[in-house]
Image (cartoon, rainbow, N blue to C red; front, side, top):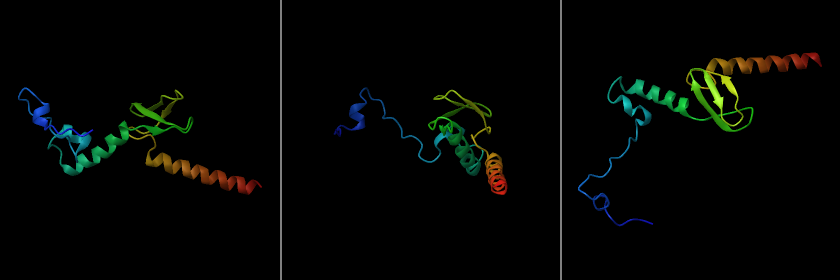
Amino acid sequence: VVSTQSTWEVNAGGRQPMGKRTTKVGITGKFGTRYGANLRKRVKKILISQHAKHFCHFCGKFSIKRQAVGIWYCKSCKRKQAGGAWTLHTANSTTVRSTIRRLRELQEMGGQ
């Protein structure tokens, strides 16, 4: 249902309508004009990842959230995991995991 009333009619009592929310800055709007645009863009990416829900490999759901620095908790299966400060999987941990997998596959091929 589309309302035909204007926002001035809806907000009686002479109040102004609510302002639009941020379109570009998002979560970094709290910093205002401080720190420079490029730094705010970098921080925005980190903050979005930090507050997002991540995938749990134990229960298969998107239910892992950050509890504290480096501690990630799955509400579904109630498991705690160690991870990065702002992201669940750091770049180094991904590299190590893939190297271990590759070495394990080589070892299995050599054993057969």
